[in-house]
Amino acid sequence: MPTTGNFSRRALLGSAAAAAFRPVFASAAPTAPVAIARYRDYDEKLEPALAHMFDQIGGIGKLVRGKTVAVKLNLTGNPQSFPERADMPYRTHPRVVLATAHLLARGGARRIRFIESFFPARQDLALWARYGLDVNAINNCGAKVEWENTQNRGQAKQYARMKVPWGGYVFPAFDLNHSFADCDVYVSISKLKNHWIGGFTMSLKNNFGNTPCSLYGSDCGADGNEDPKRERGDVCHTGKGKPPRGVPQELNPSSPREDGYRVPRIVVDLVGARPIDLSIIDGVDTIRGGEGVWNPGTERIKPGLLLVGRNPVSTDAVGVAVMGYDPRAARGTKPFLRGDSSLLLAEKAGIGTADLSRIEVVGLSIKEALHDFGPGPTGKRILS
Image (cartoon, rainbow, N blue to C red; front, side, top):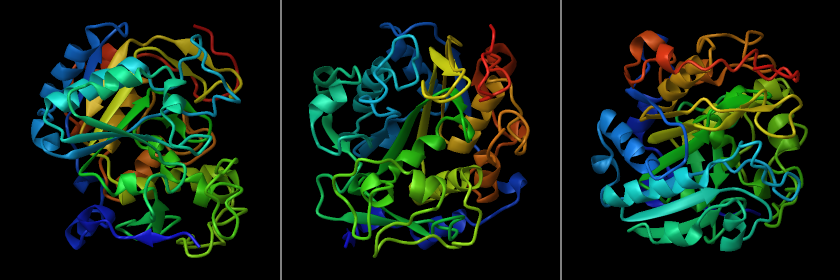
């Protein structure tokens, strides 16, 4: 049976935090400034550009000084099945990671732990390097650096049980790798791009991969599987399977067994369980039409943009607007062609507002940054 345990204040949100996440009206959902900058290439100017953006949203020194900072990357897709392709830049860019490491260290972070779930579920630095990450340079950023593949229990003896403060849309709690609990600050680094089910994928959707396949993968079994080989289709996407014994089960097994319903809600549940403290969105060089090369009709585009913010809902809402979409659009309207809007679900849960009139945008305006991502994940080629 999978083992869970407590990790002091980091493992469970207290009653004050839970109160802050009770469902609220959109007008009362929290917000925070979002910075947008024009940035055309991943060169040596990236780090000062990102530093200036951090200053524009109030700085990160008070947030990270003396703290353990977990940085969730977006290395989507098993590279054994989908090798790295320079012509389809759908993963976190290595230089964004290096620049972030330097700035977190400069801000006084005591420890920086880079996290992501991938196959094989081993703790091996070579597996990180295969994504083009300069592991040696990052390790010498000026702070203690750790790396954790969160696909299973990892380097801890037990999982951390993390509750969804408002009770959850699909799951009331999750058993996650200790890294999500054993940190003071949680950073999401994502790409500006479409998603086949969710319409878009940025800060919020990046959390979907927090679920370890050892417990939420299609081959997790009744007792868990610390060496999983399959992704989350049966348990999370379609609900045909369920987590192992002893792991929190979904609230309503009779709810829709359909990924357009389940995926956005599980995303929001996960963001509630492990709130995002800082969002960094890379739209310098990306794709549109889907989230990866496995989606038909995806193509490379170069918006030349960076976005940062402290509230992930507001940051993603600005990102969606920059892509040419309405952040308040409902399912069936672009880009939400196949699924419900995680923005509106997160707003309803009180995580943040998707109302652009309540979000302060600094740096470039949305109009200045606008880059048309087309009709969304349609599966058809979008002509430039």
